[in-house]
Length: 192
Ligand SMILES: Nc1nc2c(ncn2[C@@H]2O[C@H](COP(=O)(O)OP(=O)(O)O)[C@@H](O)[C@H]2O)c(=O)[nH]1
Ligand SMILES: [Mg+2]
Image (cartoon, rainbow, N blue to C red):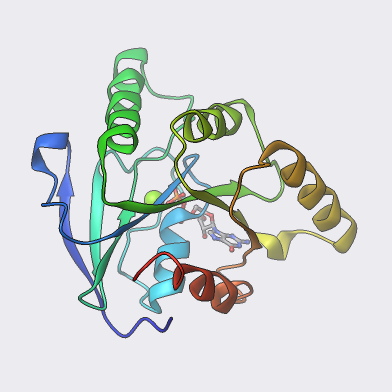
């Protein structure tokens, strides 16, 4: 797949604001600061499409991007950010889980894990949630440029054992572009 066009469509803060389920959705989820917005920009080849930030915990909305006039990339709120109150955490958690549970137009959930600390407690909870609801998901291991080969192999081994139902696992660096063509090629199978 080649992305020829990507535009921001809508941000929603509750499920009632979601667009009609008329187009397939590739959904991006991961801990806050994992590199989700940077990955979206890297895939689309547009620096400012999704807002990136050095400060974790900023995205509290579900953001929709229309790609090639044919499907949506959906940027979910980052989870696992410690420095927010319990009530706020519960509200995001509810938005996130009810969206994934109920949305029928989801073709694939792309779960981003930081290569340097794969499978933290909140990541494992997310994995268990996706598997319980039998959602098709894949793993993207972000910030690959920060690893040496030994760490890369180790990270891969951990992932293969804890994400047994992943459709595929891709090592990615938004800085070098590593993994981009591989990931886009996989997406072809989920957008018909
Ligand atoms: N080294 C490296 N840093 C990255 C990469 N992708 C994102 N980052 C950095 O990680 C931080 C969080 O990125 P962001 O995309 O805003 O994370 P989000 O909270 O998951 O959307 C920023 O400082 C990015 O520059 C990558 O591939 N390599
Ligand atoms: Mg973000």
